[in-house]
Length: 109
Length: 117
Image (tube, helix red, strand yellow):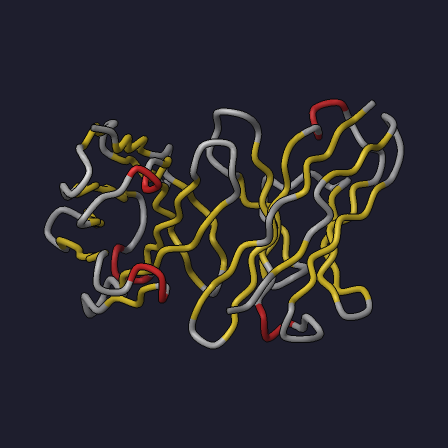
């Protein structure tokens, strides 16, 4: 059973920069894992931010970027806004199944 | 525009079954798969499986094999997810998601299923 690991929580100041990561128990995360990133606010459905690690949607704010850093997928927020406070989930594909990370609760303080 | 609209909340007793619907519109129905994801209260997201809309085939997460059934009706562009032998820990919000080129782009609003005696 693949386990996908994210930081449980992070705190960032308004205007700051923060990087969230997504690791796989199977080894290095590559584009073959088709990393997806989502933002979820309380009481709402998740909103898609990135797919294939780095490809943004038309609605993804420019201050968000997706990448592969070392052996992990990463989501970087630059110039963080108060409205970025939310939970962020990554999703990886492995051998015919998709597995979500446990999520990172991002606090803007 | 793309729309993904799910059916309303359900309350079921343990051992019962539930069948949820997910109506999609605004795009070519058979050009995208539809996946199902659930979220227990206060917990993370859990992938359940997917329906291959052009063939009607389905792929399930190992945990749900034998207990979940995903189907579609091409005439109404509607997907269904039936979960059998419900337990209290199946209480969750169930989402359907349009997926193309490995991009989980459009999500339904979610359906709350409560399993309680």
